[in-house]
Length: 123
Image 1 (cartoon, one colour):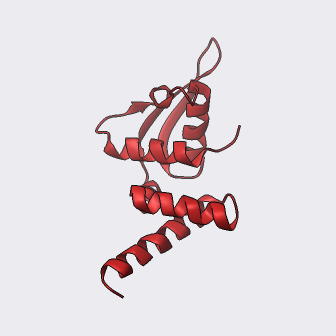
Image 2 (cartoon, rainbow, N blue to C red):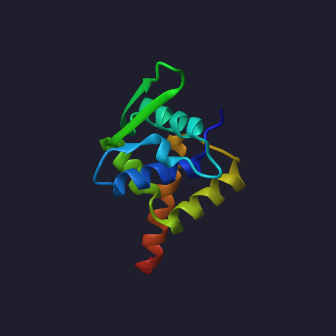
């Protein structure tokens, strides 16, 4: 299964905005199956961005509960939360290299945000 950064961003933002635990299955939509939602929650947990429990069903498949963002998850989510920063980050990465790791995405989004702030300050 392939990592979908737009879906990852949505999961992180939705988690940050929630006051309760979230079933990973609730992230599924017309573009992402429950299996894809659980996969993305799993890789976000493995990356240290989400606090989540993933348990197998006796009948097969998995159930996942997202408890919240970790400290690193908060930092990463805040670096990509702004639509303006996110869209500029995606375009910059796509134009330069096509795709990138989480660390490169975070560094790029922080650079984009810094440039936008400098521009608004007139520097």
